[in-house]
Length: 588
Ligand code: ARG
Image 1 (cartoon, rainbow, N blue to C red):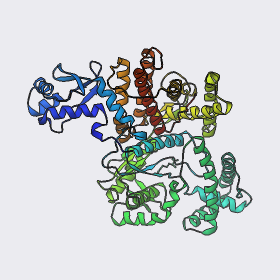
Image 2 (image 1 turned 90 degrees about the horizontal axis):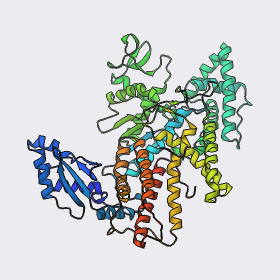
Image 3 (image 1 turned 60 degrees about the vertical axis):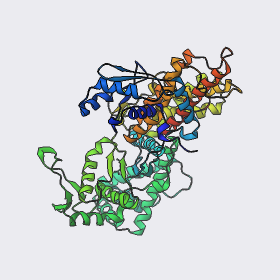
């Protein structure tokens, strides 16, 4: 189904258009329309405009009031204070605009943006042969949500899981396998947990030999060279580590209820063939220089201890390429082969210096032009209840699977408490428990600004009260139960009916969905979408308190109109939560 054209997509937009039309001299000036407590909206734009036109803001505002032609949209408009406009919307306009959106199927009337680009999203990038930790969880959850939000606005996104599958540690691992051929034998039916425990075992064993045996250390070093130069036997063994790790990664992503596509797992190794050329181009153009044998890039503005410049190392003195070389090569690939207009990196804020240097280097080399945006969506640290980085009591990093299992377990207990009343089967309890648990973890992550640290507190996350996903999921399930209770009475908009204040508040909040989404996507702030959804559920709760939906006392049009509001709220909740990667069970 086609989207409603953006001009009519929201009350907000229609009012802004009417204001502009009433005052031609305003040109493209923003009327600065905001929701307000005094009326439905307040427009503050006259003040800035008066300054620009050297006029009087109250006079300009008066002109708008006299000139505005929007009787079917605006019930009341008045000048207040130094030149604000207070605007009250006609009930009819609220319902009509929402009805047009409701008729727009899955897009809910949200317009596609006019000039979509191609955003390569670098997210969910665990490391081969290593356990995933909460940092990887954040990258996956935030990246997945941002990607869905961007896609929904019409942007084309391409995922890149820049997994750590290259580097000196593989020399040690592979050499160990060569000397202990029985280990990590290919097995078809390992599950994620076995895969990780196999990898852990090999990792620990090889580390022990590496640390104690100088001869082995030397052989491991040579093995790195063999790997980087493409020696067949070495590569085959390396592939075994990658494959075993992927089994593990997929099992964790599956637990996270997240779809990861194999063709988008393009790790550091994928750029191996480009690295030498990347280095050569940087050296030839003078962007990088030789310093003590290494190839490095210096930055005036970036200094470390003793005010010494901190360089980006493109190639080490021993000829090896590292993390920076793979990221620089990846930029060339993403810009020139994938035609990216935006490069988005969802990576721990602790790597922000690395990305600053990489982006600046790529700009100097001409690989990132003015037409390509590069952004590190750096996220903060997950903290334990004690406010320190999240660890187990023994001080070890928490295994992601354990954490997700525990979330599901707690959530299942919460679901079970109400299950009898709702009539859920055991299978439904388990399934819902999983969706509530995973949702709780994702929502807690997504509802705080990504840049901030947050506390991992499962009790709070699965609480039914407050700003949690469970609260939103219950709001959604309640809507479905009301619709079921309505039987044959179907949702239908009746614009001619006057609205209760609680209905207007809900309706006007619903109206903002498209704008909030567009802004949250453009600024990479999923927490703004989360906050919107939470407010939506709160408006719904307030509405229930004041307005009976299914009731014999209500005329059928009132029931239908209320069902219409409730239904659109449900669809908006469902869509918004889906964009955040969270399921909304029908019965809870
Ligand atoms: N694998 C890295 C880590 O675990 C994150 C990779 C981030 N992406 C990138 N293009 N450097 O820290």
